[in-house]
Image (tube, rainbow, N blue to C red):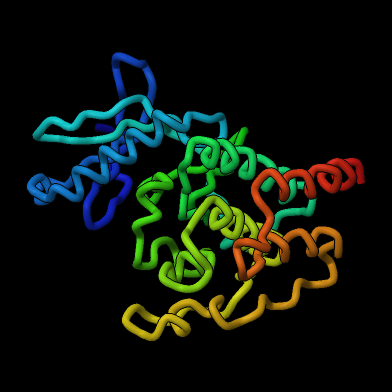
Length: 265
């Protein structure tokens, strides 16, 4: 164990040296006071299984998992790079070329997850490491399609959640892979403008429409310095009704020629 990196209610995260692999890695360890928490152990096992099932160059790599006591944990690759939120909080927005290149990488990863019947459910700047290639991290919220079909409560990070994630019991229908496309759209909006596409979410416990302004608001106008053709695709990724929203492959098809055009500019 080299140094603590933080953690949350269920887990602690450490930078470690794996001597058998000869690499520094991230250990996501179940907290000692959670060893009797069956749901926490089950969530750790689920994340490990999804990582193994959905290996992709843009998804953080897993080096394995241990579920035996005293330290049930996941071992993940260590990425020595800033996440996108760090970049944006330093008041550095991405260029159109950079943002489109990043979006295409993310959409390829999400299309791969969708083909494996998995939805990430927490696509946001802090879960995107700006390595080469970029990595989509933290699959703790990810679910299989079978699991998410039974979901009746919100899941995700408020500012980047699709409407059907905010209110799974609404007429919008079940949560599916297009919810992740919404997350990329909201992230792309933030990366290009430095702002989130909707008002600040309200506190937990408040009404759904207060907690999740995207249920009743339209996106803020996209500034003129973002090319209209790019803005149009972002808005199509942020369509309120998932049936009208682009799929990951459709969004990539729309963005690929634009990425080529602005890479040459």
